[in-house]
Length: 459
Ligand SMILES: C[S@@+](CC[C@H](N)C(=O)[O-])C[C@H]1O[C@@H](n2cnc3c(N)ncnc32)[C@H](O)[C@@H]1O
Image (tube, rainbow, N blue to C red; front, top):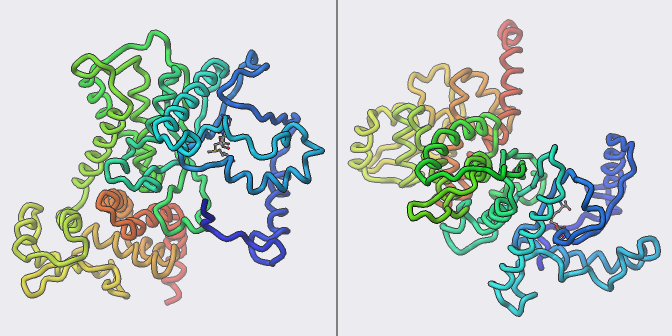
């Protein structure tokens, strides 16, 4: 057990102090006007309840496999709360410590160190809970499931496990589908504060909300080939919408699960070539593959210099490579090394070629007097400005770029996924940050554009 941030001093005047916390709470109370009294019950989600007969609107944030030992962590506070609140809530505080046995968490130490037993307990329990939800949820309302677990954060085993086909996601989706739900859609929601320590790591910026409805009992079965055809038709449209909605690049892979699973889970089964039903894991891998294809195909939208830079970057990042290789690649991308040197994105010296780092970019770049301006250059300069001068600086540049600027965001998605695959976390953050700041940058840029005539008349 490890604290990864410090607790603020309640008596200080800094953020997180006692009065500050009180302020947060009163704001909520002021803004939520309850007109029906709430009733809160503590209950094991896997077991039947006395009021199960009344249909429910269910919105849930289930446990994430082995990610957090809530019950263990809660003991830290429970012992103090119990002393002060036991007389008010005798039922809630009837046990000496927080109840552990019912908790759905895949921790081997509760099962004599057996990983398999822990896993089986979790999967079975989650399955039971989803089955109950299927039985008691109101027919007129979908079940909403919040999920914000990026397996790569905890799983060190290797690249394969870092894909979206990770155990946490797979178990949850498998459970939902087995219980008879189909996943109709996913909504990424900004649910994490960015002002904490997670700011500089590629932590998730959003939770994904899965919207599920009972699958019709007469749902059809389709073949793997039909599934792929449908995925290829539906997924790119959905991914485009997600990008336009500014989903953070770090969340794109998880957000793509929704539209992909919407196709998969509307069928009673997708049959493999040997007649066996396709596993969720396989479906997730296929969804990921199509996401990759989609991002690669987007490369077609970029100019030749940028397409060259993307391929070069993937191999060398900002390190030098052989001039001959650069030249050969430039032919394939219909550009030239010298042209890109002139464009200001490349250095060619002593038989070596390398992409310029953002720290080497000009401080007084003016796009209006640049006659060769690859999308690559635009994106790197925008990130450079964002880094050095914040959103205001990037907005000022975007205002000068006009319509050309928009492409930087598409490129940032491509570059993020490339960095993610290569394990270049630090470089990936730069591209993720550009997309996250994009709405604010464009808003500020439009203010610049509007105020421009006034300013120019001053000079
Ligand atoms: C991801 S957390 C939800 C956190 C919540 N959204 C919040 O902000 O506090 C999952 C929760 O499921 C609870 N849980 C685990 N096993 C359960 C069970 N069998 N029945 C009911 N709740 C359970 C855990 O105690 C934990 O609070």
